[in-house]
Length: 170
Image (tube, rainbow, N blue to C red; front, top):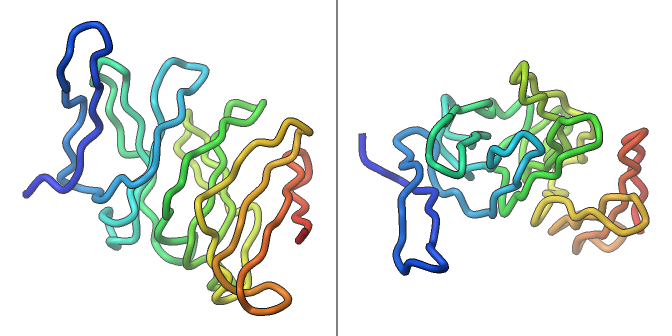
């Protein structure tokens, strides 16, 4: 299989690039990585996986412990675009997909890294499309944007309560 993306480390004291993981399944890892409390790095790919709709993965900072944790099917979301995962206080990782899900407009999801179980916690209405994932605010809420939908059809900014997963359009 051809290599369609990499995770790499850039040395600060010793110049040079070290490839930690090369993807043969899962491609276009557009987003940054989240450092988990377990010391592993968690990320996503925009495409690849079983249905070519994106994947979630983990890898150690030394390149060891790589695992493909989830392959999106469309029904559970698709195309995690520019997604940087957020680790919740429960040790699970939360993020968003730009397409798919029960209502067709993308999802907010919870990934349990221990069981590799993905749960949809919110489904956006068709054509909403989450853009750039979630950002943790200093006030304890998570924030995100959609690239379409909203009151004027041109997108929206939303807030999520991580304790209840209630979404408020701002």
